[in-house]
Structures are given as structure tokens and as C-alpha cells.
Image 1 (cartoon, rainbow, N blue to C red):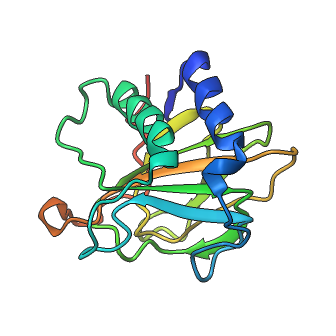
Image 2 (spheres, one colour):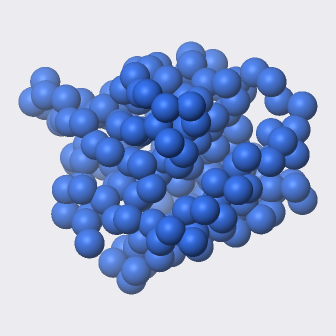
Image 3 (cartoon, rainbow, N blue to C red):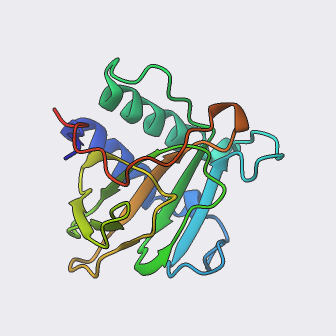
Length: 180
């Protein structure tokens, strides 16, 4: 499940995520109910909020969008990303992404194994997906969390959409067909 990210792009994203300026003065998480050293959203932060990227986040946004574009490779030209969640050392935290209007894409970076757990629709079954250095397609409107991991470093990018015009019904938690 998922599409591998080119090594050069992975390294460029990791380099950007390691810069202190990306995290700024933010020392705490910025989303209630999540366990993360840092959590921020680039783009739209809410359905009625304006789209906004700070100057020191522009390069990260550009790299993230290039990563998503390569992963989609023409397979989902209708997908529009309004927002990018960027996390540092995200752990556990079972949650739903209630503001999402459609499925999302996720990837993790660093030396940690980066597995995403998500409850499958109506089956009371948990699917465990590796997100390390690859983009996966999931629906954050199903309960999900990050499995405990080993390693010193873990960052993640979550591409999602908040626009009502993009709304789709939650159909499946994991898109196994999103693969090379």
C-alpha cells in the first residue's frame, strides 16, 4: 500500500523539516487531543479560514506539493489539497479528522518505522500501514493513530481538504489500490 517517495525528494523534505525555523517558537502541539512535540497546519486551518502560508514555510509547502503530485502521477487529478498537517514526533492519539471533507494522503520521514493504524469500515478490524518514505491514501474520518515506534526521528505530512465542494462520503478507511 502506498507509493514510494524518491530518495532525493525524501532528503529535501527531511532537510526542511529539521530546520528550527520551520517550527519557530512553537514548542507545544497546536491541536487539542494529539500527542506530538509539534503540530502545525499550513494552508487553510478551518473551513472558513483563508489560505495562508508563512514565508518561512513556503519551501516546505512546495516540496510537499511536489511529493503529492509525483505520488498521484495523474491517477487522481481531481484531488485538491487545501491544507497540510506537519507533525514532529506524533504518537498514539486515536482520533478522527472531523473537519476533513474527503480522503487524505499521509507520509512519514525520519529513521522511525512510521506505521499508521486505522479502523476499517464496519469490520472492527485494524489495518496497519507503513508510511515511512511513501505516500498512502487513507480516510482520516475513520479512527486512526500512529503506532508506537522506535527510532530517534519521526516527522509526518498529511495532505487534506477542508472545502465543502470537495466533499465525498467516507467509503473506505484504506485505499489498497493506491500503490505503484
